[in-house]
Length: 439
Picture 1: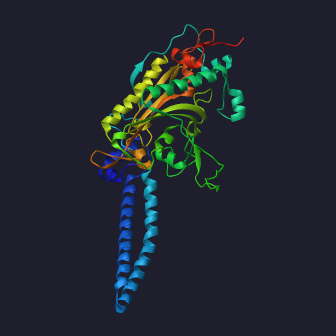
Picture 2 (picture 1 turned 180 degrees about the vertical axis):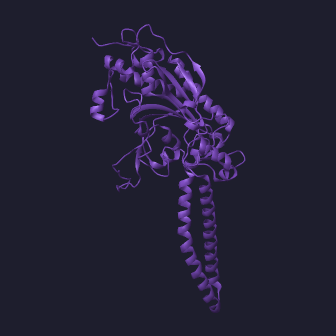
Picture 3 (picture 1 turned 90 degrees about the horizontal axis):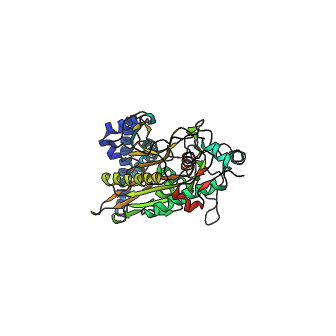
């Protein structure tokens, strides 16, 4: 959510963000809805104050004075009965438009229409050259008997899979490596809920509108209702998260923190679920785009200071880069252009690892600064040194996702005989140094 005062004072900048981010929103309509809302709110407040004033006057009024007061009170009551629903309707329209207002991107964000206009700003290593024809992860995994896509589709459906044998150990090694790296870097490791209420997904921006829309939101809703503490059917709708980010950010929802607590660094390991509505027909083969996977996510809750937030975002990217380098995976860092940004993002970067079998770079991480956009939705504030309450800034980054880092390891470390050498930093977690064909 963007501050309405900021919108009123920066109309052209917000209109530019709407255009550059391809948001379906008429800002003039929002500003008109805001004016109507404010006018009606003031009218309701005036009428309510007058009603209270008349009630007080009645307490001391003489018999002759009561009649006119009663008549005036009836008129005020009638006006309130008309004004209150009109105000609620105006506020509803205003709120529905407000949730679509995007954050104005940072001044260093590239302009561009799509992901084709993202800018490579750093590269480590080069695409690996083989003296044999490299295989993709699907062929490698099937020949080594470490993934079963056929049984996965039978049991789970489209994009389903079973990890098996050393494949299971390799994925868990990647996750343990990432969790321990986060702890070493000062991030509090957590295993957060993956079954959550809708407010956490709305608050973090995973609902495009006010409520869940199954046509556009890549979120799974749980159909079965559960019971509350008293045994009654719970009214809250429940959803499966696509990342630990919503759960971690909602941990502090409706709280007022102290400035000395900030920044708060969290790292969440979770199972992740994504319906991938918008990616129908893309990457239909293999593990690159699946409905269910594991991931370690970084979250930082910071002061409302742009310079500090940029440093914290760089800190998160540096950790991701360090992990890719320790894993020996060639990668590049991309700065995301405005046209490829979601509504709430202020500044964003991706990391893409080279995947030889796919013969392309594949996204293995994404670091985003939302400034106060998520904090306003989740109502997370802090008290600064002057005693002023401010909304925190919220940042997030993918530490490691299980499927794509798994793909990158298989394809970059494949040998001519079809075996896979395990990166040295993972061997203490796997207990073996190579995956070989079963005899």
